Length: 351
Image 1 (tube, rainbow, N blue to C red):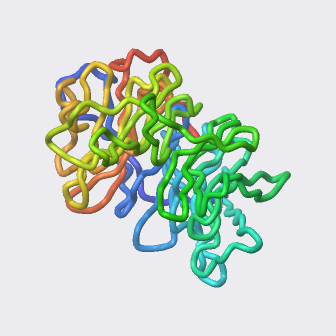
Image 2 (tube, rainbow, N blue to C red; image 1 turned 180 degrees about the horizontal axis):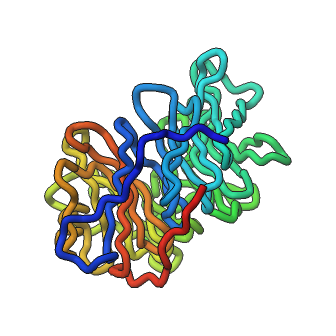
Image 3 (spheres, rainbow, N blue to C red; image 1 turned 90 degrees about the vertical axis):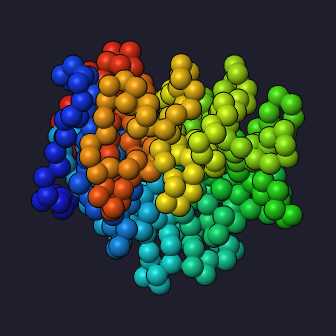
């Protein structure tokens, strides 16, 4: 039986004048934690905890499971069964790793011929078929790993470096970026072993693909803008590359996760202590998450400052992220209830 924290993790009802069950704010109560990922239904979350080699997996009704030896936890499979990130090997080098449903650690190793002084490999995506994607060395090459085939490098078309940032739930599409010797990045999709750059309708380069919806039908990242700089974008096959509307209160917008239909995208704006969680909705444009919630009669509990919304369920009903709670990092999961129009029922208790 995997070790679980004994501290009680309670769902905190919002002190807002909204109908019972319309919305809930789950404070994970893990000082130093930063939630990185949600399962497809949003009922399981995972992330890292600063100050030691540990990560966590949390589920509605199931509390917190410690992921031993984790120095980062970046991804969660659709069911929440597998989490992926990095741990340290016996030589204190970073190694791509995944944790199974019982919290057991599985290290993946590196690739022959790739220098690995401090970083052997890093994992950024995982599926329920235990396909793990990431990079070997210091982003020297992108890889995909499966129990049957082990670690294989992905074709980068002669690029000097590449990273796989994620993978669709069915494992058919891997995405990330490649980088030429002069430092120019291009967003790349790998399918059936072939690498395909992603471009905007005006032929400007997509610099990187950093996140996606569960099926990877919606892609997010940074692309060249009309001024020669880079800005956030959302891509879909029917709409192409679309930049979020201007968001004057803050700069450095990052889009970190999308609902399956792309109608709700979450992320952050600003840097350092000024970083704040944002949401981009089809109806309301880009807003700070706390203000977007307030416009729906939902108040963030006292003492919280929402720093980043890093994950969202496929149906857009649940949003996860991290912030400062009384001055310390902690993580949260929001259940928006029926306000999203989802027919999804509540979460069953998970192990």
